[in-house]
Length: 143
Image (cartoon, rainbow, N blue to C red; front, side, top):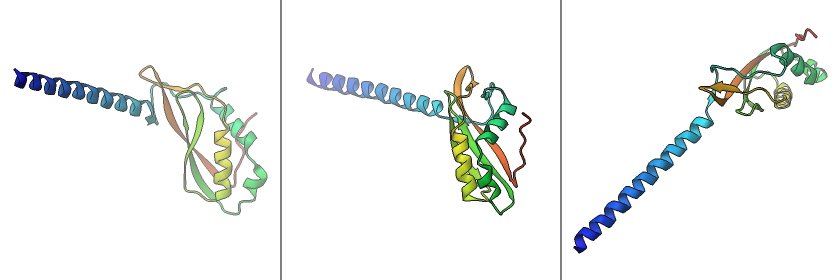
């Protein structure tokens, strides 16, 4: 009888632990999926006023005295993330041609207003965007 009781206690403890461990693992996987960043999804994030307004906003915030002082020419790419609530976060720079430009673009991209977030399978998700910047810079805003 004592052996059965001990075996039952061990089984209950083992079974209870494995269910708890499985639930913890499932929660961790769900958390990772919530923080996954996409590049292409069903419904992309939308800047207030659309793509033209995004260009105009960025140009209105850029310090052109600083940008025009850069004596190097070239193209670099700035990646930023629009998170699941529509907030912009600077992510990365590729092909940096000036640390001053990198700092300026980080400042500008982090000042973007709240977007309409992107959606994947009906859930709001984070999405990466990459924009090229050419130096010397030519304004593109048509407003």
